[in-house]
Image (cartoon, rainbow, N blue to C red; front, side, top):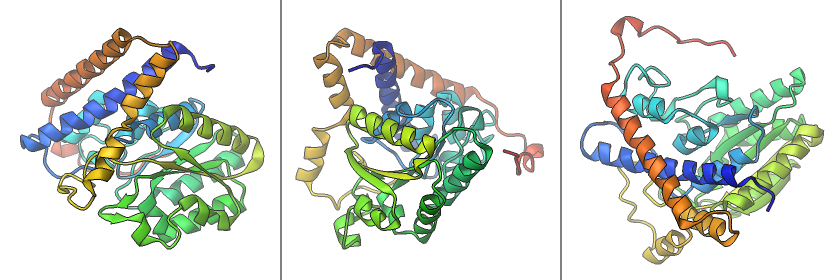
Length: 321
């Protein structure tokens, strides 16, 4: 393994941070501190962090409705993400966007989107820009298995493939579109198999394995960067929670949930780091403690942040990128 030890510990810490962030949110929703809904990515942390780790820092990323993990993995400030959920002025969208509408162009995160499949054409357009401007950057487009049934997905993938754009379509296949299992929604449940019809290169990877995801994304990104066009990676994973805050998740077999819980990506990465002699349990405990402290600070920051000024309600409706 040729990865830097300190970097791997940092990425493990970020995966714990993502999980802790959403566990804190869950508690805040329960207390009535935060209202509305949110879509958690518990169980999908390896696919978020492994994908970002496989890119260059200046590459671009688009997300979906389940985007907290993608944003934090790309380097978002957890305090500002939390403040956005609180609806405070210090949030990434000034408290106006909430869970599904956050972006930070300075770190290459082009945004999340509440519309299923809504970011695939936006990501494809961003990739066209990179090709025309010769930036050398690659765009990574996160989407879910449910989005692969949307018309926008097929239009975007067709254009990205036909124009040989520098883009990776990264499907986080958690095997359920809300409560519908992929085996009931599609004759061919594999997104990678269906996408082959457009002529792009596809692969399937263990989405709960940080190292497998990182390598798959890195290899595809470098090939796409030098002109080999679009790639699609299907990361097989599982959300360890309901679709959204209102979903009690009563439609999944208990045996299935237990089997995936045993393959929790946080457990897998911790075990791998210890097996490779890259971390001790003390190192991992310190990383976890740092993540928990950061989340406590983020909640405190959000609580103490000011409410948005009503006089600014029409500000920042349009931006230039």
